[in-house]
Length: 111
Image 1: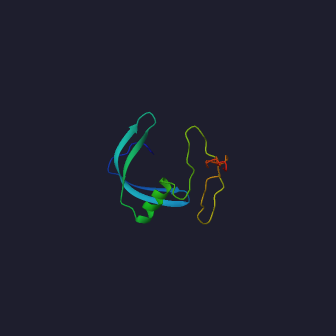
Image 2: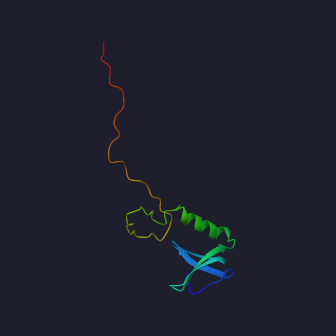
Image 3: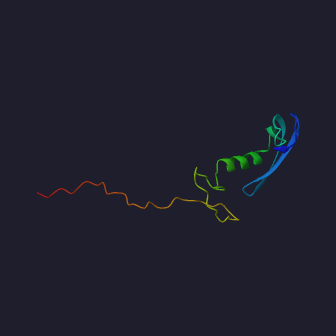
């Protein structure tokens, strides 16, 4: 969104962070929805082809490949966690609380 009226065909540069990565993407405005009461425009962008590194960083964040962000469950607020500054963190699930029932066959009486 930008303040005021925008027009289709406007070249745009987006600069943002995903996790700890700085991402820069350029593109062109393809469509505009202008909200007159708030005097702002919602821009619909078409990104220019980016490098393989940038695409991989975006996809890794979107699919949460390295656990860089928390998965938000509807109705619950995510709990803040301390960020690691180095290396890859491998997360595992906690052990099961209940023991798996013994499904072995009963012993047969000796004759």
